[in-house]
Every structure is written in C-alpha cells, then in structure tokens.
Image 1 (cartoon, chains in turn brown, green, yellow, purple):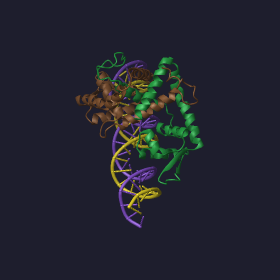
Image 2 (tube, chains in turn purple, brown, blue, green):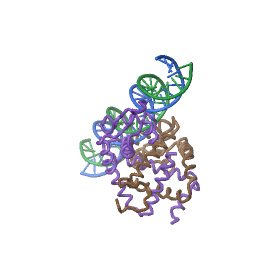
Image 3 (cartoon, rainbow over the protein chains, first blue to last red):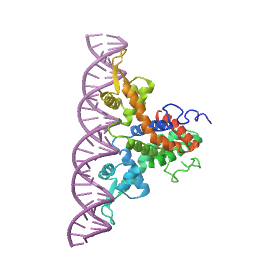
Image 4 (cartoon, protein in one colour):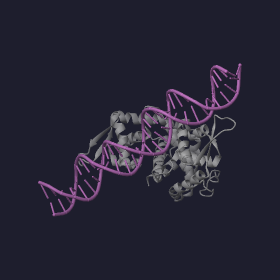
Length: 151
Length: 151
DNA sequence: GGCCAGTCCTTAGTATACCTAACCACTGAG
DNA sequence: CTCAGTGGTTAGGTATACTAAGGACTGGCC
C-alpha cells in the first residue's frame, strides 16, 4: 500500500507540502459543511458550543473561548445568539461572580443532538462507504490534527 | 452504528460518529488557521483562489465558485477583493462575452506562493514531528476527504 | 475600612465571507 | 428582432471573527 506515500512524502514537491494539503482539505470541507446548513438554523460555532456544553456540562465563557480558539468577545456574541434563541442560559458563578457559567437548556441539548445527527448523515454515509483501513486513517488523522490544533 | 470497527479509538459514546470527529476537527483547524492570519492580508478564500489560478491558469467565475463550493455571487465578491488589491485581473472571454476570465497578476502569483509557504511553516513543523505512519494517515485522510468534499 | 491591580465578561464598531433575490449583458434559436 | 437561457454583478442580510474600551467583581495591601 505504498501507492499513497509516493504521492506526497512531505516536502519533496516544490510547494505542495502536506500542510498545504491539510489546509486546502480543511477549507473545502468547512465550506462544504456550511453549505449543508439549512437556513434559519444555528451556525457552526454556535452549534459546536451547544455540543460541548451538552457533553461537558456548564463552562465559563473564557473556557469556551479557549475551546474554540476564539477571543472571549467573539464567544460572548455566539453565546448571545444561543441565549436569545433560548438554547442556553447564563448563570453567575456563585463562588466568583465575575464568572458566568453557560449551560444548555433542555431545548438546546435536544437541538444539539438532533442537528448534529442530521448534519452528519451525509458525511457518515460517505465515510461508511470507505474501506475500514481508510476509515481508520481518517480517524487517526482527526485525532492527530485535533491535538495539533489545540497546541 | 454498532457495526463500526471495534478499533475505533475515538469517542466511546454512541453518538460520537466518525463524521462528528471529522466535523469538529475541521472546525477547530479552520479557526486555528484563521487565527494564524496576520492582519491586513488576504482571507483564506481569496488566497485559495489565488493559488488555484496560479496552478490551473485562468478560470471563469462560475468555475471558481464550483471549485470552492460557494455561490457565484460570493465568489464575485472575493474576486473583487483580489482585483482591487491588484492581485488578479478580470478579462472578458473573447469567445463568449458573458463570461469573465479571472487570472492572477504576477504580484498575485508571487503572493500566493509566499503567503502559503509562510502560513504553512507552523503546520508543516507540527506535521514533521509525527511518525511517518502518522503522516501517511493524514495524507491519506486528506485525499479521501477532499474527494468526499468535492462529491 | 478603603484603594487598586488584575481577572472576567460585555458592548461597540469594523471586516471577511457567505447567502438569496433582483438585475443587467450577452448568446443563440426562432 | 424577440425571447429564453446563461454568466456575472450588485444589494441587503446573517454569522463569525477581531480590537478597543469599559463595567463588575476579587483579593491583596495600606
């Protein structure tokens, strides 16, 4: 199975490094995912936030902004959209009232699950058509790249 | 869902499908890449366009919009930014004057190469620290996912 | 007690990038 | 020459991000 290695062994080709491929693939996928989004629904960031909250429980705004790699002010806006749509709540932290704990409402949790499932239908279908080895490669790449993104 | 390969090392929960992991990794990487962007420079889309033009030669606006999976109107705006910055030209197609051929200027081509190299420094550094197998997995995943995104 | 630096969050203003809808400009068929 | 279809553009709106500026609270120090 050296067929793929011969294509891109990192840095052999002039400018087409592995990083370039990763970057363009990410851009393409991101736009593709966005185009799947039905109108009138939450954006990708807002939905991600909802999912994190659902999985990890209440988080402070700063924690969320670090999770998403965005500035706190940006996250505050995203949370605004969620709260004004009734999908999340802000609760002052009783121990440190500078902090605000953000949590999902029941509707928010439900929406997070439902929307993710719906949006992943197409992608999962495509992925399941791949060979187990290919799926494994993708799973591995995701884990690796997630780590890199968080570093 | 239960028929997934048992070596799935990612989430243990049933809802954490491979598609979910791909999606969240893509979102994370996208935001990470964006945060690397120095201010006053071109956005990701504009830069991608410049790179495609450099590699493939002149393209019509509709072709570009299909490449990027965006609406023609959106691409028109992105091209506007490029042309007003002097990095691309619009040329009416002599055979069909409804069409507009978009091409890079020399400055645009140069910028595309330079900026990509600069932006990929960090990512390539991270990637080269990985084992060859991991790099291979990522290269394979990129190829697979690029195909999926384009389908 | 009261002051003050630092932390956490918010609001305001700006920019990128995407969308739909509406609208020209041109082509090719009749 | 009219008209339907194609290719592009502009207008208006949304989502997301940033920086800058400020309010609210905490904890240490006088």
